[in-house]
Figure 1: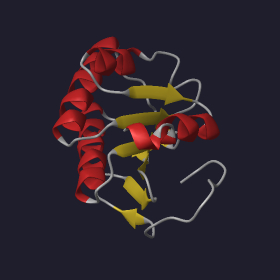
Figure 2: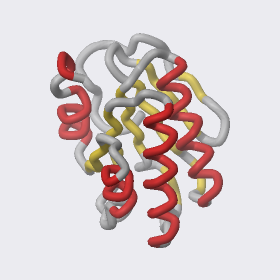
Figure 3: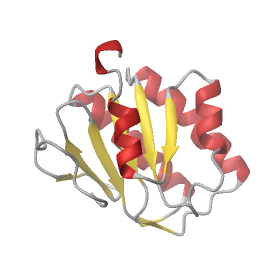
Figure 4: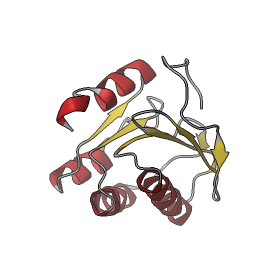
Length: 143
């Protein structure tokens, strides 16, 4: 899933879903990695697959790793749509937190996260895996 390993063992083995989405189930969250070439509609399908995978496996916290996604160059309009769509599907699925892990280049504009937060989703973007996990798994007893 990229980056340095995290403490503990996965609760389930790696699984490849459609559309270049790989998932790994952990005790308190689901990790989804997006691979392949970036394309707006494909990215939305990747979002939907990862959110559904978390909900279907009883996880309310989702780490989305987009570091291996090639050519991630969404427009401002695309970012707005990703934020609005991501907030909607995540809230409908009952997710409590979503952490996005990407490269500095991918996350130079965090408008999508801002749009999602403005719609009530507890989301944050990170370039450091350790920081993403610390935030995602923080306050487990409180939600």
